[in-house]
Length: 113
Length: 115
Image: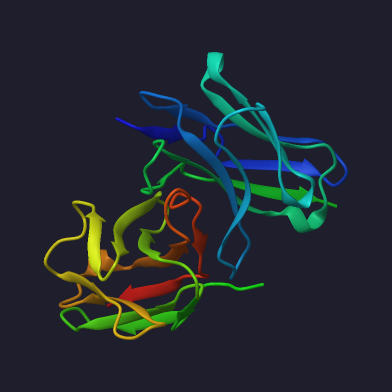
């Protein structure tokens, strides 16, 4: 079955520290992959997306993600976290050509000042 | 920047009552979706809607659920007879359509509490 797994439920980092949120996928073929962020009271905002081509994709707010086929991973990174980055982050996949998104369980990021 | 809006932000209803959740998708989008997230669980796909009909639905989307685009701007989700287990956050989303139907923009959600 198609799935997306986020192994970390909660992560705490200090402001200014680097961040990496993990995501693994399980699809028959290479899926399209996304990272969404949800701040309290806000909707799900698209951070970045991967379809094909360059395996390192840049997104908004200084985030990037790297697609690694050999590890079935699509980890989200940011070199220096800001307090405003505290939110829940969702890794999302969809089979190529489809439109039914499959969400990971989410990772809650806490930023310590 | 255009965005998806949803009303109400929070709805409390009694078991067995009908509820209608409303969404206004982005104006030039053609595909519309509902997802839900039960507290502590994953966001789950419910239904997709295109050209005034359901294009795909999940096993969750049973006869108690229905969707409608009653006019040129609104997209609604109706639950005919709510159950306790329908308590969840319901997200509406929209997308331009093929070949970018997967690039979906979400609203802020409606929290439904069934008592």
